[in-house]
Length: 583
Image (cartoon, rainbow, N blue to C red):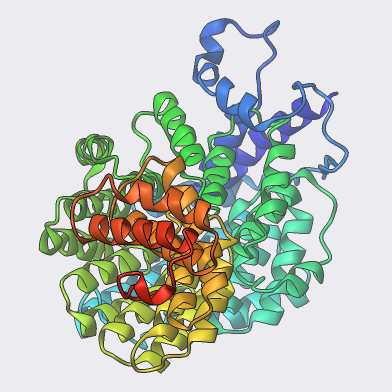
């Protein structure tokens, strides 16, 4: 049996087992990967593969080799025996009733029905029902005490009893992989991260198809050392886990490599495509991200998951018509999803309606108060509204949820810079560049802070601008600032070098404006002072095309150079100074 057929069979059985235990998000994830495996044209008619046809261009764009049934050597395809289902007939009758209550979100009723059942499936559903009942009550108490967006110390009151019971069951050896997953989740919520990691590793090694367990384990791997210390069995699900872990640890190249290898088997996986888009998003390769999401929407026009990232790309690219269409589409599909509210918030932000934008970000947070993007984007809107106190609070809530969110640290830096607290701003800018060192905007923001009147640390600013210039600063802000800073410090040769680079860039982009005039003026005066009259004449001649004081200055420079070349003493050159970069 080839690897693709092995994966199909494992996923089909896993979907049933996960669904039977109420692990619906893991079941959906497995089903999406099942459909993501390319079907054999000899076995399936075109109607069976219509879901997959549209993804071919994305697959070609990211793959270097032709698709084959043989997996890449770097991807693990070891098989793990599937566990047998619990077949106790009496137990299953109670289980069916409890499962119906569970599906109706009557978690305590479900747990009560299974209170005397000893089967492993019933045991898991009972404990899981208690866990979810505790989570539901916790959310209710938070709203009752502090409102939907308030901070609270409320905890899940079922955690203590669940930890005690699951620990005892594990010692007796009667806890199956699903019970181990729940035990790891309980330990994670209680802050016992080391033991939680060990338990979750035990769970995924014995049952690797539960994506929820892998996701919980990934959140506990906050460093590369933690990730490398895991003793994981060799299975193809491990590669999905590593790709996501690399992504979260900002190891973008390694993450993309893993996803590209996985695509050789899961050729049409929308999950893989969306994760690759996320990596490209953090690399600021917005054109690639836009192409991926356009194709994802063609295949799945009612998709909402990850579409908030797509809206961020459209906002950054100022593709406001596409953003308007996307907002309208998600509003009609499901307007009460956090992602939908974020997309609509981005739409109103693009229209300059910041109060409405904040309203929708707050609505997203009422639906999911741990929705990271909404906190960060709401902070941006408060910055636009000059409400720095609210912006700081929003950004702090974002970094509380995810300390690795560089956008929130950057927002905090901006907010404190607005409050004229440059030392605080520098601290947060440094946090952001540590997390995202390849983003030129962050280095430029930090350089601007060093350059401010309160610090005037010009050498440090120059270092930051140079780092920004070496990291694909497409707008060339860093080059222009380097030229002006070196000019200000009296380092005229260095200033001329950067003015020339800036001028070349503006000419290549066919841009006009004051920066171009400044560059021409500086270079004309600089080369005249260096007695390189031919080069100075080129820049002076270009300045003659403009109207205003620069034209008269260029005429004076040309006259002075002609007189100097004729041997007239400098004192007779209309008192034009030999070099004054600020004249």
